[in-house]
Length: 324
Image 1 (cartoon, rainbow, N blue to C red):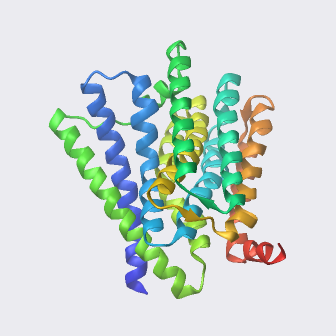
Image 2: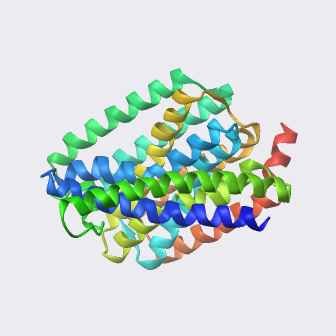
């Protein structure tokens, strides 16, 4: 038992530290190679902060723990809105531009709808994976051409909130390699430890994935969003969350489906994807009302996240599944 706890905690720490150094080193490396801030934001920052979710979900799926793999993504999307965006708004009210919400928010809702369709069909296979990656590529090209014309593109501003590694080019490369090793090792430890803990406590892998693992893999988004809120880069905070949710659905689940097609967990299909959908849909009018998220609204989102976590451990999802 203690070993499983140590593995889980160690995995969470390695994921957080590894992702941090990976992103900071990659941003420093890209700067030194003369890559624009816009391209860095669309690629390095976006992929780097999503890497923990990818490796954890892929490792879990390869191990046969599909409940943990899917739960990690669904739980991360819920945590991104309720926990991370709520915490950021509690720090400083988040304002947004209409264009950011309409473009990125609409893309997130489309990705959410497609994911729900896949869940209701009962599986995610290589066809879903190819379609998802093509849609993501199209979205990134659209963002690049639209943001290139903007004076203050959100994706370019995102890079300003990353504390790039200082020093030589070699030191930046070392940070990237070390960070990648940390994320890989952290994913391995976290999956092994959390699966063992779930079995020891009689809790489903889906619940562990939706709560503990999802929180751990969302730490990079928490760090970048909190930094954006402190610096009052409101569009960056919102764009980071919308982009992260989009990447989780179109990149991570598609990549996992390409490598190892899997059946969609019944418990998540019956309950949790609908919570994710409700949270995603509700965010749009919430942000559109005055084009801001107040401290009070952020605090309410935090409370709702605690309710969601409590519902997981009280077995609400399992009850909903038996009623279907």
